[in-house]
Length: 323
Image 1 (cartoon, rainbow, N blue to C red):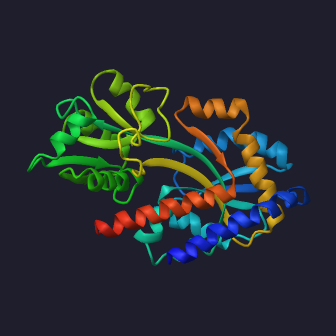
Image 2 (spheres, helix red, strand yellow):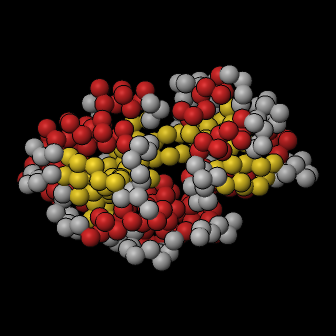
Image 3 (tube, rainbow, N blue to C red):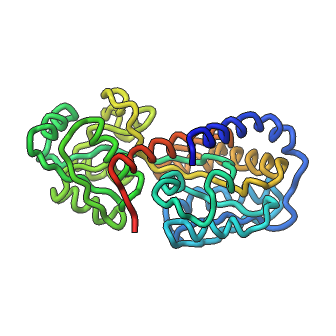
């Protein structure tokens, strides 16, 4: 998958945006609209869809149903969309793993650039760089500790190839600290081991870290976000600290088949953006730790390209492999 091909795809999406807007009033769904979630029920994607369901159904005139298709590191659910008719009645919610899989899993049974079109980038959860209190009091102290010869720090992640793994590896390279990755099968045990001092640092989901930071169990020394979080207003952004390129967060967005008619894509894009910007929906999502983005398809396409390119560099530089 060449850089040129990704660039052409992003340009095509940008050029197509006016046509999508013009077409948005010329299509309505003729049957229930399904949102495929490629994970098990009860995951962090659920609130984004469930809180939007009723408004979307009213807006579109058809029920909006959730269909769970877990397995294969989201490949099973994504294949389900590939098999669905390209008529606008099926979409999938994806996360950072969609961009990482382009490089991690080059033999997937579909082409992630050719076969799909971005619809809306819905939300993001920033990652906070947290350290055990025994390591350092602040960011400068952390860099000093991590750059000492033989420092041998350990940082955790929610699994090989996850967004906080790749963010941690990228930060390790850029900051020139001595650190080793320790993968976990999810957030719970990783967070426990960080609090217990068996890990020295980790990029972790903001909502998970607020309580342990406020209780003094961990120190939050940076946040990977465009601006500071209202929950931790004294924690500077990575850009403020001189590391603007660090990319570590958890986003969710919607994709459709690439050959879905423009009119259907435009109508669904407009409906989702309207739903996510409803005060009662946006407010509830932000209460649970999400930052609502509601970015349209062209911007989402640019973001997918940015994450795909960044992850490819990190994966190749560190020879990261998945089973």
